[in-house]
Image 1 (cartoon, protein in one colour):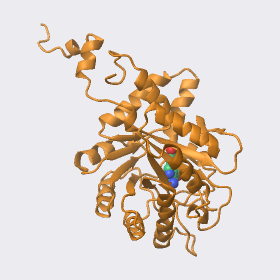
Image 2: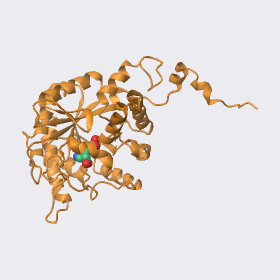
Image 3: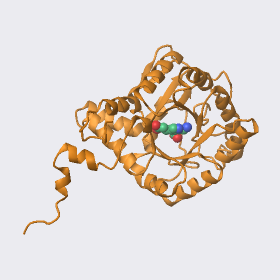
Image 4: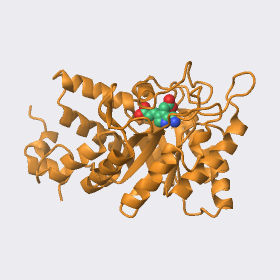
Length: 336
Ligand code: PBG
């Protein structure tokens, strides 16, 4: 007649819910991706990503300080150059926009946070691919590896603590590790974008980096249909020396975050990408979703799936919400 087991007992007030909450999101779990743009003299909002800016060198420093003060765990920097060529040569140029900005951030916040850099050529090539092209117009894996090695050196020299190779070339972790070690950068870590899918959710990012790409990245990024393949990519990256591994995108790929977290001997990250950000921002702007609750629920879900680290454009904002959260608030874990 009466149910003997009543799960609702543990949900009846905020104190009980707080006590039995399984998953925490803390500011330290969040990494903020940022864009520095060589061609802007004022910070400019990225049209498809409301609230995310193309930074000048100065505004980047200020936003980095804000993020660090809010308590985020790290920063992931992307550069948007004004000069592009077939081999993306500005990527390895110490005076290239990304390397200059890395030096700025290293001196501004380098002692207080983890400074990460995107190690990929797509922002720097005039064709927009993540690697160089051969005569037939295909991305040439092994020539690209050499360039990644050079780019990685420039980033390590500029003060990046962690490099995020995101181009999905075979052997990229091994090649970059070898290049770094040969130059004495044994301490520079590699956060491998191990399983990165050819995703429509990257759409707004193409705006964010003024992408020159026509076509797609299906010959190097993974097919969204393939989950098992993520295991193989993670295994390869670990064998090649990855210090941390990442799944990307986040929300639609939580099965792979879980799969990876269950076996990975190294920390696991998930990248909540531009499309995930923009969808929520667009709906919130129309009043269709509660922005704060939605964002915190998404971050909690990524953590619940097993991610140690979440890369998110909401990092600074979310860190402030999490810090200000009163004890007993049920939305996202403890408030110590
Ligand atoms: C490529 C890169 C991309 C993103 C991060 N690094 C775009 C792509 O692969 O097409 C996407 C990030 C996002 O959508 O937020 N270097």
